[in-house]
Image (cartoon, rainbow, N blue to C red; front, side, top):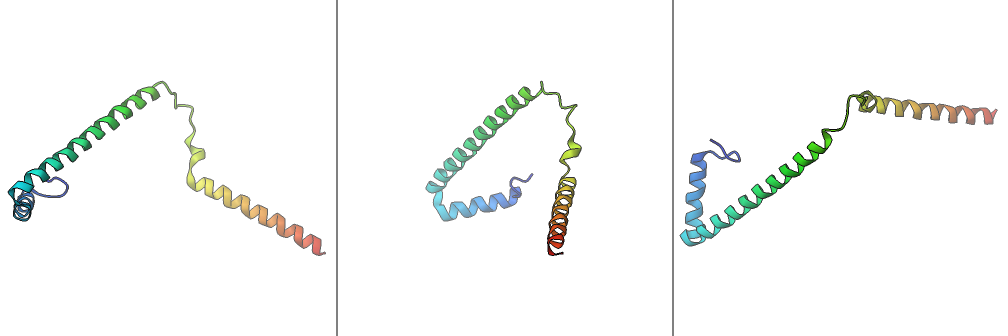
Length: 101
């Protein structure tokens, strides 16, 4: 089993090195700090999950069947913008050419 890409053997090596570097007294404080961080992360995750679930329940009443996503295709939006800009340039250029005549 891996946790954050660290296997069980690698975790044991990290733990042994931490005990050697920090000492047995400091390692308990470090583990308590780690536990505090993990608890805070779990609490944050639970809160986000609850908020997301509540938001999704609010969206269950929304009818999306009439929503047409074809108009939101980024390729089409870019194509239309480029086409409009090219037409504007062509009109401006032709107007300048007619003024010169």
